[in-house]
Amino acid sequence: MKATWNRIVQTLKGRRSTPLPEAGTEPVLDADLQGIPPTAATVSVAPLNWAYLLPTARTVRWLAAGAVVAAAGLMVYRNPPVQHLAQGELGVRLNQFTGAVSLWRDGSVWVVPGLHTVRVFSLRDQSYRPEAMRQATGSAPLQSVEGLSLGLDLSVRYALDPNSPAVKAGNLPDNVGADIVEPAVQGLVYKVFARYTVREIFSSKRAEIAQIIETDLRTRLAADGVTLRSLQIGKVDLPAEYRRGMDSLLAEELASEKMRYTLELKDKRVKETELDASADKVRREVAAEAAAREQVIAAKAQEEAMKHVLPFKQRQIEQRQLEAEAERVARVKAAEGAAQARRIEANGEADARQKLAEAEAYRMDRVGKVNAEQMAREGALVTKHPLLIQKTLADKLSDKIQVIIAPPPTNGDFIGAALLGGNRNAQAGAAQAAAVAEDATTTQAVEQ
Image (cartoon, rainbow, N blue to C red; front, side, top):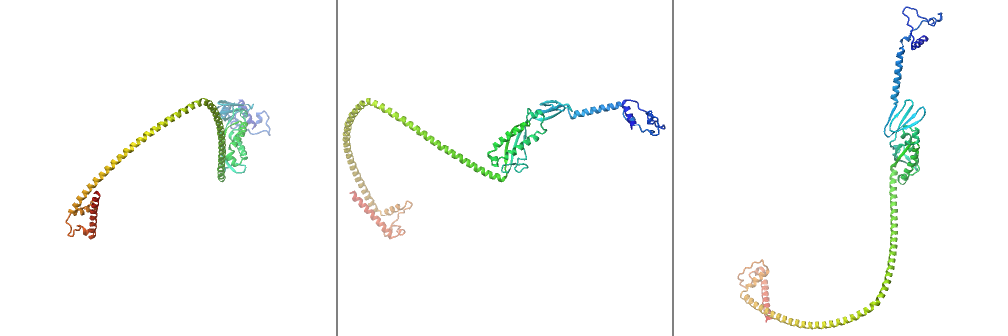
């Protein structure tokens, strides 16, 4: 093995190699090659010389150069010397030997493989919404001070601060959301909500809780180079039974609040009425005082005016007395004239009535004479023609009865006496005829 190694070294050094023994020749001893006399102890058979199978020195140099180039290409491929940063990204380059940290924004960054390491972070706004605490029946719900589980829809919006010491020092983890924001939010939210009751969380203290969480979380994240943009608390998820009770309780509280505001409004209205009454009282007092002062001033002015008015009033009284006397005299004259006119009118009216009475008596006298003459003519006509009575009676019964004049029965009765009841109708007809004759006689006596 030693001889083989020597051959390899000689080959690499550029020396000519010893040719292999030909077939049928004796093998050369190692001792002969080194100038050592052969002895029985050092005599050995020479093995196969593998050095002749190795490549030449030029081939080895080319292989070494190719290996170096391939290694350099692989290193450049895995660690490019120029790294591009997109808009809204931050590059943190760390020098492996000096430990110096440099920040880069948009553009390209030179990275020497083996010397620099670059980590890229996003400066855009990111949001974190913990899903484990959204439902009251979730895997990690919140706990109130009573120990009741509740869910919360929480949204946290954050971004890296490139000017913070943590970012400039390059101490940020690779996943800022999972390693910084999520632990900070969970560690703060669970602790804050454990101080309040469910009723406070659900109704009255929600804004206060959000303010506390936002203030504390902003401080914690700022220490790690993260800026809190906003924090929003959404829906609070409660168990179904507790939510129904909470809804009824809130309804009662709203009713009581409404009643309280109603009572306050009524109290203010009462106070407003009192103030209005007081203002009206003061207004009327001021108005009364002003009216009294006006009356006093008016009285004084009237007193001054009376000095000039009284003589004028005296002259007016005298004038009215003279006017009344003149009016009395005029009325007496008018009454006398009216009485005389009425006497004349009465005499004329009496004469007119006398004339009218005489005219009426003359008219009635003439009408009676004419009626008596007409009755006499009708009596003579009836006596001469007795059937006219029956015809007249039939005409008086109805205008729809057709009258037929026929000779009377032998006994002188009405032609329809049998149909109208016989003797009874005859008697009624005779009585009617007697009454007509009596009326005619009476009329003639009156006319005479």
